[in-house]
Image (cartoon, rainbow, N blue to C red; front, side):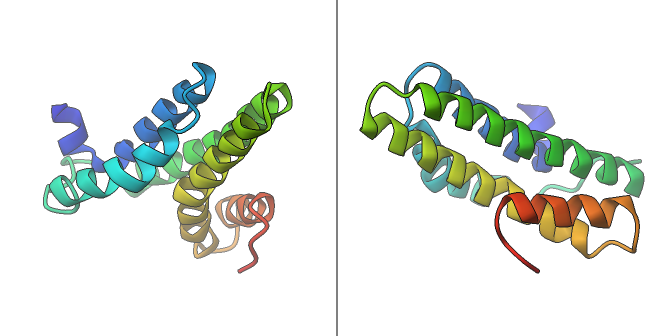
Length: 137
């Protein structure tokens, strides 16, 4: 838990991972609780109050953003796969909602950060992520 306080930006990936576990185990409402209830609570507790760990370079955060882009595409593929296998219409809707929440929670924020980078691969990673989210900038 101490690592979460030293690296608060990792919290978003942890919440995405927990949401996907919820989809895997059939608890498709789990993302709704995590994103709409737990995340605001964690944000108020952790937020920006904690200083970032010493010695982290800007390239560390660039690599973290690229990892997040990979996670966004993995979430999309994962949710799409489970959506196609959903046994009931209600579960399909919950999986689609989970995917939408994860994309909005993680994808738009990451993509928006990347499109404001100078020209290059990071900027294009942001545009490609916005395209999968069907959001122009």
